[in-house]
Image (tube, rainbow, N blue to C red; front, side, top):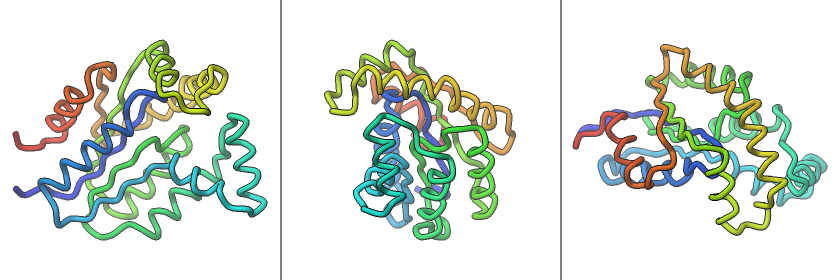
Amino acid sequence: MNILPSVFIFTGRSGCGKGTQAELLMKRLKEVDPNRVIVYLETGKLFREFIKGDTYSQQLSKKNYDEGGLQPQFLTISMWSQFFINIVKPDAHVIMDGTPRIYNEAFVLDSAVKFYHWPKPHVFYLNISREAAVARLMGRGRMDDNVDDINARLNWFDTHVAKALTFFHDNPDYFFHELHGELPADETHNEILQLAGFPR
């Protein structure tokens, strides 16, 4: 099966399942295109690793994280920019989970897309209601998933991330797909494969 290198961006409210869908897609890509490198950017994971350090910047970032605060724009962009600089290979598949978070960041990401001459990316917006997001996050049982932190993250999405989505929605250089994120994971996965043009 001949699969061309592709770029996939997953976004949506916390709890929408974007991480699950990114991992399912990565598994599928490994099955149908086992010899091609897959670059998987998971910004949340990068931050969780970053705050384990003891530099002043890492200490401040950890304080933000522990208090449920949001990381500054310069640090977020630096984090995934350095990741690309160190990891990206020619003709790789690229999967992004949770990036970008704000409108300005979408412009910076677009400059990376053009710099690496990536093919037209697919943006998958997994749209779930705020109520469904709260229920899912509370059901995970993570220590940082308390009501106040959850509401702060959801407010951030409604205020900032939703605006960033308009950049991709209105941009002919991107395939923008809005999916009903409250369906079973396997149904959403199959829809993603169809929208991305995977052979049946």
